[in-house]
Image 1 (cartoon, helix red, strand yellow):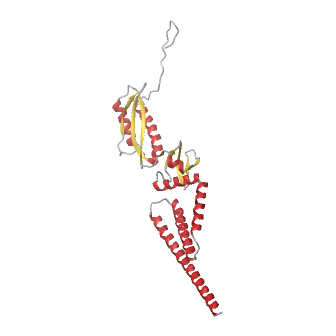
Image 2: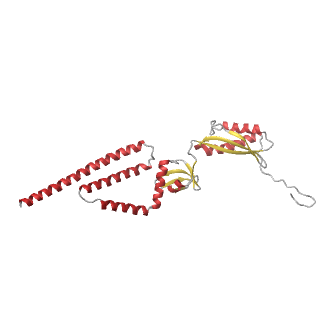
Image 3: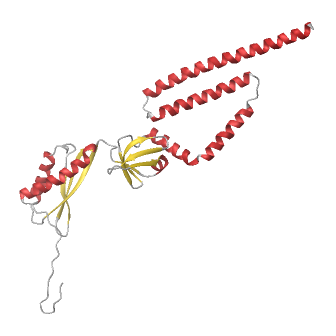
Length: 273
């Protein structure tokens, strides 16, 4: 009887010691995970990573640490972990197959958030759609068009197609074309265009405007006017430039011709050429 009691006491002591070890590992592991999450959060706030990724990265770190902690506790308890890892891997593969399309959008979202081809507030064009970026999520990006339509575009489309970012740089060039009569004085036309560019509050003096004759049209001499403005002022500056050019040409007596068709009538045959 004494031997049986001794064995029971030994088993009770082993289980008690094992339970205390598991509890200690759990407490220490949870504390370390909390500390790691705090450090990760501070590092993210100091980094240039988009804020959209903060929660995702923190959740990934938390889940990975919890999985490691569970596997460690199972090992201490003497439970085989190979089956658990196999089941976890199979579940992950099944989920990945079920959400293939979402995963491609998710990968595109990560690529956009890390490489930053555009940010919130930029005017972009992709796949024939032009809009201002209102929101960037991990799966979709939300654009708002000039006629106030909200378009949700999959991130895989934005990441894999050609994309134009109209606000990617601080400055943009306005490429204006103006046709004037062949009778107009070239130097006077250039002087008037330059004066209009300098008087505009939306156009910049640097880089300097470039003005010159680009081609001879059927009924007009075509001038190119390359002037610069801030990207945010592009459309206002463009419209203002053309309006002020029209007013200046009218004031200076510079004719802006329009296509004309001249008909010659043969009085004898009644035919026209």
